[in-house]
Image (cartoon, rainbow, N blue to C red):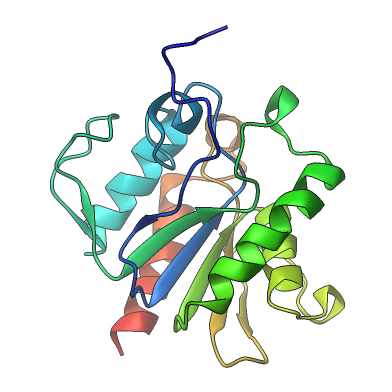
Length: 186
């Protein structure tokens, strides 16, 4: 429908030697699918990048386009699923198919912490890391000490749906992201 958009698997973005890896769900249809950069061009990015700037994990200006001056500090953003899914929610098959890429990439990284944005990201991350999902129940604000030594912070996804319905407030999101930022700064 939009041949001038990016329309490809969205690459990870940020600091390649990051202490914090943020795992999102999948590229948004009008966001990363359009722009080619995670969380860029949609409401979830507005909240995520404003929060990262507030807690010192980003500098520059976020302008909903990849050519802005935004830079991530000690943070890398990945998605559980690399391509925009139908109806904006990945099927289990899509998550399984993309997990091989997440697993390979995470094997190259040694972060101090992960921040999972939503249950699907939480579950995909645990499987990619070889952790037992039953040991680490998803819950907004939860912290988990993973077997490999990193700490996992959970948050509801910063989507417009979650904020419009009151499932997630800006304050709730800032609290979790702030705790993750403080943790990696130790």
